[in-house]
Length: 338
Image (cartoon, rainbow, N blue to C red; front, side):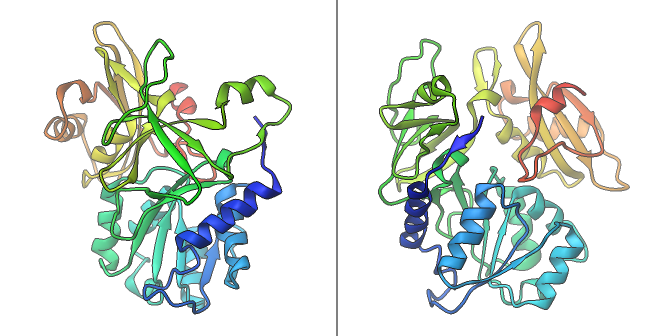
């Protein structure tokens, strides 16, 4: 589906970023010129609006990397005094685990921000263990339909997507089979609805899809999350990816975060597959670390020790690579074909 984003949508979101401190990425809050390498594609809103337009507007020094490879990124980090680094989860994941990536590459970096897909807390811990906990880390939440940013975390809240942007409303709606919308309270997980000046005009030449997605100005994101007592937004997964195990809703993202913490696992993706007794059951696709053997039993025990019974892994397949798009989102449809 083509998303219709207006000039006003983008201007509104750039102003919201400025209000939220996207232009003050120096740890001390100074307005010294930021230097940012951009390797995210400009056909994606994260790369084009957040990394490119946002920093040009603020007088930043933007260095474009035409093609992402670990070598290209490390070369740029060595040659320019990078102060701001924007990543997507797969990039952070493979960079942290690459032996060539050392503290010298982060000498001038004042902040690291991850977006475009959920990032598990374990990867952030691995990053800080290697680079040092002095480097502020944040996550953001958004989607193409919101031009793209809705929230961004303060640097101390690693696992949160942060506080909702100014002039933006968010409500958490109960998930049910009757399609009855019921607003939820603090720490209750449901579908995220967004309303604000950054919400798209609609889907291009698709009025029915637009009507299904936008109701009274409220955008139904299809993402799952909750708001904490502090008002921070937490993302737990996507509605379409939920695995219904004996009536319990299981989020693949939660399972992936637990499995990636295993010392022998390089990457992971989880989907739901039909099961005669359970209705559906979690199946994990795992990429082991190079030259290391890991067994199904090791992974299943690792999960069983940390999560309740209905979240246990039922099947495991070891593969060479997890299929993902250009911004790091797992292509789960491809996994169903394997």
